[in-house]
Every structure is written in structure tokens, then in C-alpha cells.
Image (cartoon, rainbow, N blue to C red):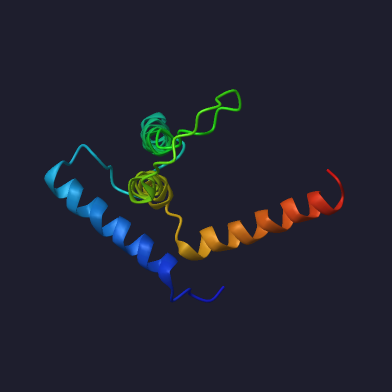
Length: 127
């Protein structure tokens, strides 16, 4: 697969660079990567990173005030920038998981395309 000279490559590059900088300051924060996925400590670390991403998504969801179907009053205020910032925080943790696993932009892109085909085929076949 050809290298993607695009924004996804840039995101991976920025995330990995940050992870290295953070490891220099706080060595316990990130192990050497790619991690050995057969090791318990590696799996625990990946799980911790993924859960941090989930926590950030929950923080984003806290900005959505009008989702309850039984609520009659609506709160029109919505801080799109704060919502997006929390989503980006979540993505940073999820990208950390990918980097730790040794996954790059090309592999993520290929996997995304494969899964997209699967879900579209499911839709067509009334899965």
C-alpha cells in the first residue's frame, strides 16, 4: 500500500513525538513500543490507555444536554469547541494505543477500508 502523505500520517507522527517527549519526562507513562502483546503488562497498559480514551469521550458527552427523550425543556447552549477538544483528547489516547501496538497510518487506513466494506455488505444483505 502506498504511503499516505496526508493528515492521518501527521496525526500519527505528532502522537508518537508527544509520547516520546512524555516518556522522557515521565518514563513510567509509556513503555518502549511496539509492545509485546503476549505480555500481561502490555495488555494492561493498552487497556489503561483505551479506558482513558473512553473517559475522555464521556467528558465530551457531558456537553450534550438535550439527549433525554423524556425531558421537555431544552438547553440551547452548546460549546462546540469544548466538545471537540474532549473528542480530540479521546482520539489522542486511542492513537496512543495504535502506536504502542506498532500500527501506522497505512495499516489503520487499510483496516478501516476493510471494515467499511464489511459493514456496507452487511447493510446490503440486511444483516
